[in-house]
Image 1: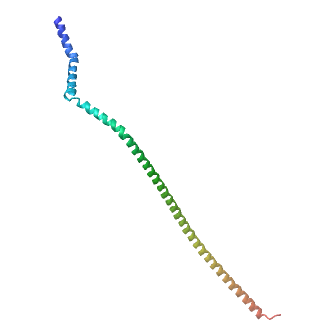
Image 2: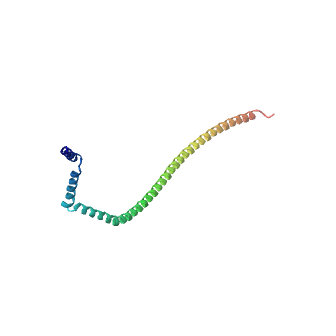
Length: 154
């Protein structure tokens, strides 16, 4: 019975206890990573870390100054472009008002010409009526004068 329990314990330890297998894999990984490669990856990572730190210390202030300068230039250019756009908009508004003014002036000229034509027509009409009335009155007075001259004075 002891032998059976010992065999069952061995089987159980082989099936359920993975520590020996895992420790063997860990030893293989460590040996592969550290011994065979000679800490090459760790040295590369350290070198990369140093390069990143140096770059941050040296390039960041330079890039920050350049960025500030470029932003200042862009801001100035945007202000100039905005000013030019406002001037163009003002000119277009003035041109539009000028065109409206010209159209209004042309309309007023047309109305004035029409008014003058109407006044001329009314003047001619009044002149015709005047001439007709003068003609009628002249005829009437001529007849009256004829009648006066025909009749002897009493």
